Amino acid sequence: MPTTKTTTVHAQAMSLSLDGHQENPKLSQAEDAIEAEVAYLQHDPIHETEKPYTMNYNTEGLLPTTNTKNELRNIVINSFRTMKSPPSYEACGFTTKTLQSSLRMVDFDDPTKVKDVFYSEVKDLVWSMYPNAGAVEVLEHQV
Image (cartoon, rainbow, N blue to C red; front, side, top):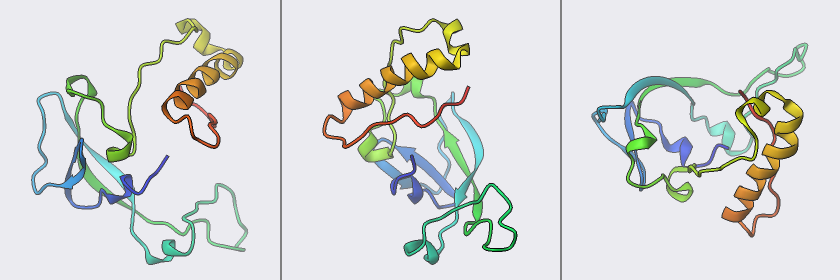
């Protein structure tokens, strides 16, 4: 999920634009936008040679539970509904697509149906966007 594009959001006042992340001394806010405090991975030169990690279990002192630090930043979150075009993956590190699932809303309460049907639908959509991808997998979901 994280890309180098998303890790460039580091300044005190930032706004997202469709042509990439641009520093902006003022938080510009559309009428339907909200401001939020978000934790970002703090830049650390060690991550040039060591992958950032956090252990979710007791390491019993064998190694630190994390080699990362977060820093809080204020950002503006604009509504996708008012965008003239969706953000591009190449510029923003994410995009949105419409997926009409064959599942009914009540089916999303059934983990087996979600994994068997919805995961396949999501994978097919991603394959259609990136036909040359080496692999496409849905790792997990959250409701």
